[in-house]
Structure formats: C-alpha cells, structure tokens
Image (cartoon, rainbow, N blue to C red; front, side, top):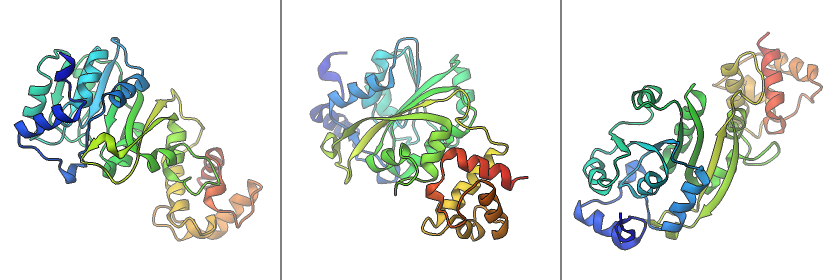
Amino acid sequence: MSKEAYLGNPARTAEVLNKFGISAQKRYGQNFLIDSNILEKIVKSAGITKDDTVLEIGPGIGTLTQHIANSAGKVICVEIDTKMIPVLEYTLSEFDNVTVINQDILKADIKGILAEHGAGSAKVVANLPYYITTPIIMELLEKDLPIESITVMIQKEVAERMQVGPGSKDYGALSLAVAFYSNAEVKMTVSPNCFIPRPNVDSAVIRLDKLKEPRVSVKNKSEMFRIIKGAFEQRRKTLTNALSHSSAYKTDKKKIEDALIQMGKNVNIRGEELTLEEFAVLSDILSQ
C-alpha cells in the first residue's frame, strides 16, 4: 500500500468518510486519528511483531488497523458499528492478515474468537471510546483470557488514574484493579488536534502488561473487589463508615473496626490510604 493510501492524514480520512457518507457516531464515541506519527508510536508502544496476533477493539474506518497489519502476523478486529463493515472491507482490502468481526466486544466470546483463528494468545490494541473505557479494560483483565498486553488510547485523566498509588485523589477502584492484574505504563499523551472530530480532552496511550499471577494473594478475589468498591463509593468517609453504608459491600461496623485494629491501622483511616496488599489482608480477615 502506498503511503498516500494510508488513513493517518486528514485528506485521506476525509475522502473515505465522504465516500461512504460517514460522520462520527457520538453513541460509539468515535474520533478518527489523523496523525501518522501517533499511529506508528502506538504500534511501537505495543511491541507488535510478525509473531503476534493482535485483537483490535473498535477499528472504526481502519486507520490504526492499517498500521497494526503492517507489523503483526494476524489482526482480528471487533467492530460494533455495522455501518463500518463495508468501509473496513474497502480500507483493508490490501491486507490478507486482517479479519473483521461485527460484534460488541463486551458480549463477544473473546477466548473462542482467538481459538477459532488459531491464536494461542493475543496483544490488544485499540483507540477506545472514552465512555466505555473502564468496562472494556476490566472485562479484559478480570476474565481468564490469553492476553499478553493491552495498549490503548484513552482519556488522559483515566490513564493517570490507572497508575497512581495510595494517597492520591485519583487513586481508587480502577487503580487497584489495574495494579492487581498488570504492570501499567503511560507511553505518551496525545493532543485533541490529532483527531477529527476534535475531542474536548487530552488523550494518552497506556500499556498494561498482564501478570502471570495476580500481584497479591487473596482468599476471595470477588469479595476484595466488593470491599474496594465500597471503600471508594463515598471516598471522603472513613473506611468503616463507607463500608457499613455501602451498596457494594455491607458488614457490621464493629467487624470492620476490629479487622483494622488487627491490621494495626487506625479505625478512622480512609480507603484511599490502604495499599492493594492491605485491602487483600482486610478482605481475608473479614471473610473469616
């Protein structure tokens, strides 16, 4: 494919959008990348080689897909918007290593899709819609999927939240979930000027390398995450007050206080002061 045929520039992107009478769909959070340097950096950040199968979520008109397909052995795209399927057939026609599947990634059998295409494992790469970033990332992390890494462009604020530690105002359930399952690294920030239409916020590319085993040992993972969710539902409250009034995890206030004392913690501590390891210990005590 000639350099001019690639979609990572405004003129070519506009040409394809006009050809198919397409405009960005707000309900799918569509913003089209128009900077080839950023596209190449995303592929480089993901560490894609010809030995890799890449699962791309929400390829849109195929802008990032073209760059991924140049570097990967195989690319499997899952696109929810039916209107994009003929566009992708057109923009990806010169690539014989790309498969497009018209499904909702949150309802798709990812493990089955990868197995069907002979992929023992995959690297996930995506320019994710902001409104659904967290559900998709949690789906990829929590399920027992053969995924090596997740490299995604998301809202900068959310990317920062994923890699902060205790004591920060951005520290919360998402930070702890990401830390439990992966190593996170923000690779770069991306200006709104690199998209059409132009989003109202800065974006960032973050890479999550999945751990072979969760970072900490805990008896009941589901219970720990219910406790974490409860701790941050009303983050200004003390942990005992937050948990005893939580919709995610309810238990007796005295039981929580006793557990904190057993851990050597002040009973007036807030959830944002506990580390992942301490949430695991708290969960194990409370589940006894």
